[in-house]
Image (cartoon, rainbow, N blue to C red; front, side, top):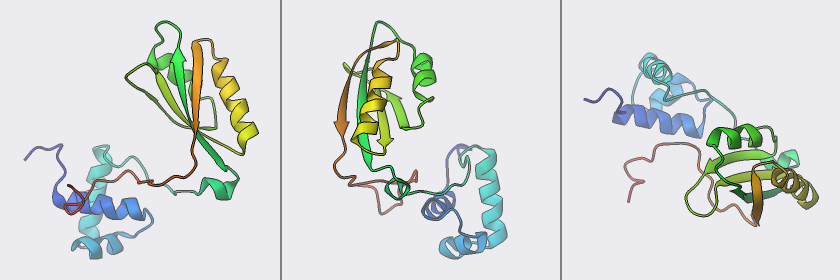
Length: 158
């Protein structure tokens, strides 16, 4: 068996933890038919391998006052390295995620803001970065699907 491959039990454990990272090893074990010590050993191995990087809480941005969300496409001047882009956008607390992409756009940034005025300020700051030629923004009306980082189960695949 490939040592980097996750077996069905590891995948099941990860699905349970992705839904509730506060679940005890006993609670996880009850859902995957393993003892608590067996779950702990597997979780420890998953952490050592870097599959599990940590445990966290999922927050509701709107409940924290962040009511506006947008995707900002950034078109770079000349050739800009991903490292330069990362260094610039990770300084912004409003940036939720940033990815280099194929096509005409160089970088897509997901932004959360308190309101439209705040979003406008963030877009203006992004546009003022020295490597940015122009930006194009798309405001999110409704977030329809948000999934935690989790491995689909056997019944979830097409």
